[in-house]
Image 1 (spheres, rainbow, N blue to C red):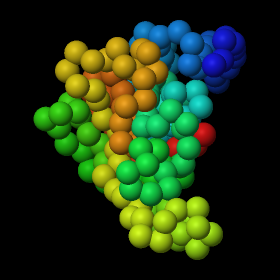
Image 2: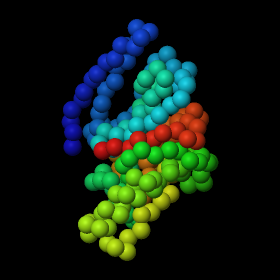
Image 3: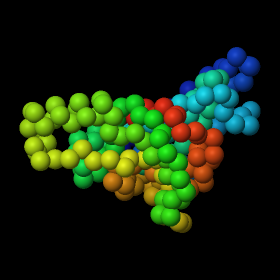
Image 4: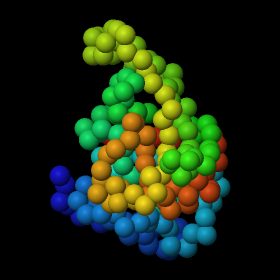
Length: 188
């Protein structure tokens, strides 16, 4: 577990200074961090999900816009190899659909598996890393938690089948300004 607190600051063109603390796997993340003058993202956005830091960051035409705490599937944080391994896939994806979800509050589906995902999956089968009978899986997305269970995010409790889970208030915020087609990069 990391017990480090790292601060970095960035001076934006407007002279505004952002101070960002990067706390991973140590103390509960209380809420999202956002650019202070932001009324909303400016122009097109992209999303970067860093599994090792348990963070989902949003970037717009001005640069960094917001960071939200998230959790994943497996505690090992490995790349998804096959259906049922509970790992969150790594790579570059797009949001393909958005819906209000009866279990997970809001759901933004990703285009997993992509061509890159299929290529990795085939290589893993060829090398015997996964069984020849394995399936690649699907239905990966960004979503909320069960009602009144945001605490799983605060405790960095990985619980999904490979999706990215956020606090319900945070996923509602993200859902509100994120269109289908948005690029999502997931890395370790």
